[in-house]
Length: 212
Image (spheres, rainbow, N blue to C red):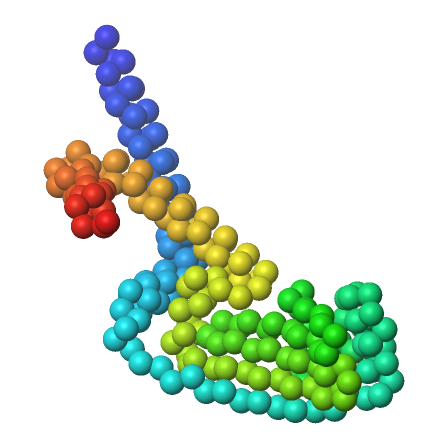
């Protein structure tokens, strides 16, 4: 009986050392992965919460061009059946106007309207079906609006959406491993669970009492 106790203690210590090693490893890897993202989302969370404090004057730029006659004829044929934007027209817009056509295309008897929302601003393009005149207008609300839209994932595309998913997973691993490490060290740190509980209770109290 007396010999079993040291053996059990040794196994317990080995198990604790194993989990501490791996939890610390996953904790620092996830921290390194999501560090810059956490800084970005923390700063833009503050700026979004105090958007009224920060003034911004939108800058509007407008460019006009003329669609070649052959492309205009192709566009009119597509407009007759409200088809997708012809490939050669889309290629011309990319090359001449630096515009990447998207799905937000509206057809009418007079013109084709392309909605081109973007982070930190807005943009649109119209093509007159009679004259072939192309008007492209871009509104830029500044770098702060740009980063705020990155925070919200507004009009940011598939690549940024994937980054947010990866960042969210890394932050989840970081938080979970941090919680497990807190649990393993809590016997020597009596304030651990009161502080963790405060982090849960405080937002709940504020939400119940002050949010209507």
